[in-house]
Structures are given as C-alpha cells and as structure tokens.
Image (cartoon, rainbow, N blue to C red):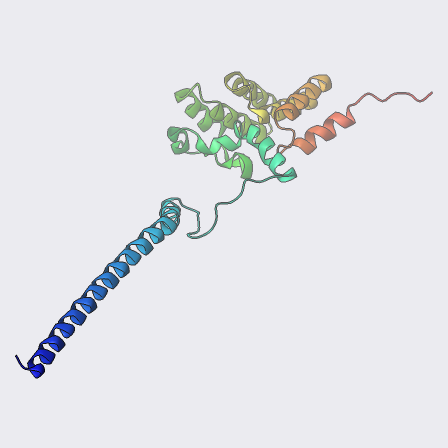
Length: 223
C-alpha cells in the first residue's frame, strides 16, 4: 500500500474518531440539559405549589382577595372589644343565625334586633318560639320586640326565659335592668347590669351599664 493510501486511511480513521467524540459530547450535553430542566421543574413545583394551593382556597372562600395574605388576628384594645362582644353574640348577634323557620316567620326577622327592633312583631316571634321552644335567640327576639314597643315588663319576662335557655345571653340582662329601673327596683337593676358587664365587659351596652352603676353607687359622706 502506498504512502498516500495509508495517509488517506489514517485521515479517515481520525475523522471517524473525531466524529465519535463529537457525538459523545453532544449526548452528554443533551443529558446534562435534560437533568437541568427536570431539576428546574421540580424546584419550580416545590416553590409554586403552596401559592397555587393558597390561590385555589382563596377562590373557594368568599371575601378573600386572590393573592392577598391572610389577615392577621387582631390584637390590642380592639381585639379585647371584639372578644367581649362575642359573648353578646350568643344573645343578640347570634340572632343572625337563628332557625330557618324563624327567619321565614313574617314580622320576626331576627336580624333586625339591633338595627330596627321596633319592626319586630312580638306575636310573630312568639309563634316562631312556640315552634322552637329551645331557641334562646327567638325568646330574646320576643323580648326585644316587647321592649321596643314600650312593654318593658313583658320584655323582661321574655329576657329571663332567654337566660334560662342560654345563661350567656348577655343582652337579656340589659332589658331586665331597664325594666327594673322603670319599676324602681334599683338594686335589682344594679345586679342585672353587673351580670351584663361580667359577660360582656366591652359589649354594645357597656357604656350604659357602667354609667348606671356609677350613678347608683352609694355616696359616702365626707368627714
């Protein structure tokens, strides 16, 4: 074999070897890119998954803005007031969750207890209570209706019935105290206001209760 043939064959072998090396490098680079892409996808999934979960739950929960942080629990004096008013929720605020049949009773919309109690019908609320005699919210609705129409004694009797069903019905004590004041039973009124403040120290009527207790406090004579 001539030198030229040997050189040509050697050149072909070198070219083949270079091609194999190039193919091997490309294969390794492709594998490296593939592993990098998989790792990026896994890392991205770990990072994005909590946000997607929060977004999904925010969509299903009304009143929550998507992408907004969960509101922090209130602290400070306002939180104390909210906690105190939650005790009253068992009496008047809880009327918003009264029995469905009571809400359907015309003239006894329990949601009107705070805003427009004079629109309540004592008779309608009493009929609703007759259907649900274990519901303190309905008994208190009757008490508010009687009280709003000037029947303080009847309102106090219904308020006591509400307390028999729910001893934490703080607002019932206010209705009882007002009736006691109207009848001249000031000591009984003091006791009722005191019970109210024990259940709802920062409730809706805490100013009225504190003022009544201050005004009826026995005055000590100066030496």
